[in-house]
Image 1 (cartoon, rainbow, N blue to C red):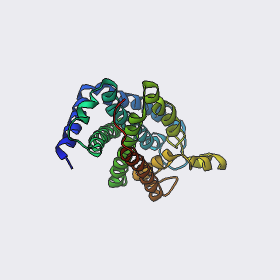
Image 2 (tube, helix red, strand yellow):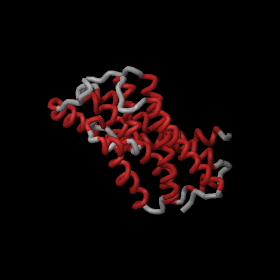
Image 3 (tube, helix red, strand yellow):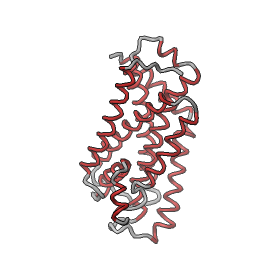
Image 4 (spheres, rainbow, N blue to C red):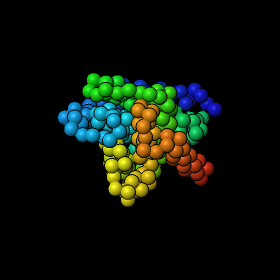
Length: 253
């Protein structure tokens, strides 16, 4: 394992975070703060979650997970797509660096960026709502597992995408519906039985539910099931990555 190459890719991507601070950190934090102001303060005071948790605090885990997933996918896919687009990927491919080492470097950096954004939003939420964390270790573990999973998913999207339209397909058309219909702003217990059943086929539902449990010890589904679903999705992404590399796929346009 060429750890020097992995660290070089990781450091380069993390340095890029400083150059794109407005887009990578400030923008998602401001957007999420608006959710807290509108839903947490203005609307939340008039809403009952049915769980005994104030609405502003109830939506906090979902909003953090929404920002985390979005940031990880965007960071993972752009990290590998733009070197393909500009042609600089050939500099990496000509170096003695294995594809798995490229993957670890890029995915690790994307996951770190997502974690940074998630933790900043968690700290920001304290200015708008009352938030408690009953299980901080599980909260961090959920964040890390989710960050790695969706960073890897974003990396695979970046490999697959041939143009900017394909690159924006999943973040714009797939992720928002899954997150908004995954219990971010409500408990699925408030839904009719049919839609409760449908929600169980939404993978983001398990992420939000398990992450919310780490805050308030309440969830729509057993947190161990949530962990298992995240691990299953991560395993699926790893299988896809292994298949791509074994078939001799080259990281080039």
